[in-house]
Image (tube, helix red, strand yellow):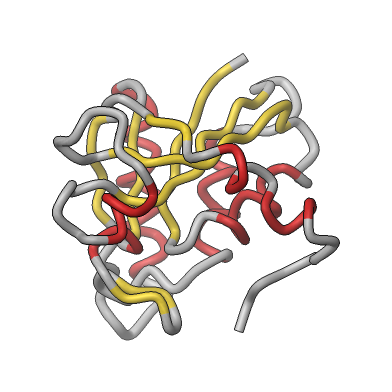
Length: 154
């Protein structure tokens, strides 16, 4: 098994998309990229912790490649938005790829550059080393599924 971590705005919708991908064995939503230990949702929402809402994806590389997960990441949000997705505004909603090793970094940069060639607007996605992933509160885990919703896209 391998791990990938993506921030694509609010974590609820990307979690559903990744969880429903063949080869993905687990997903968790949470916070990454900030300086506060064990941040709460309320703290992250202030914008002062530096964290992004993100999805940690556990996957079987024999069934789904990291490159395929990157394609899903690019398709499930607008990477040209800086610190926002739709009505959600703030640094916690930024677009970011948190890489777990050099191979992921190279793949993410190659994928970003390929995607940029297809877009007019500039991609704002950050590519950073993965740091501590703090799982979000239990009520955020599989949030849409628990409420019988398939999507929260606008």
